[in-house]
Image (cartoon, rainbow, N blue to C red; front, side):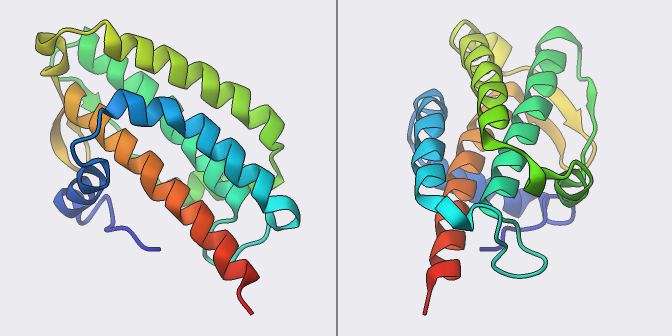
Length: 175
């Protein structure tokens, strides 16, 4: 399951994530993610750390990536709300997954980190005004992005990687 490159195809990447969200409430989608992750982890069993191909991520690596993305989003949201058009660094998600050793991570250690960050981010969203949500930061790779856009993209990002987790398990279990 390939996504447009967020660096070289920024607009296509944004569109893909927003299309996955559709007209759904981004906070509701994000609130449901933890339960959906739990379901996939229960199903993964012995396949938790298996990669479907050498350069593709395992289920636990995908979970590690979701935690990384939530950490990065936390900072980006707060910079955007607190500063005037702050610069936002991009990051190489493959380097993070590999160099942080996510395939060796314990999901039981990752889940509480994700849950705490996600809860704080949803609370921040719910108490933000329309004016606050319109505040813009300058993403190093994609240019101007509002808090609203970032929050909606993250909901689509959840759906993309949950789908990828399920596809990974199907691929590993295919005859």
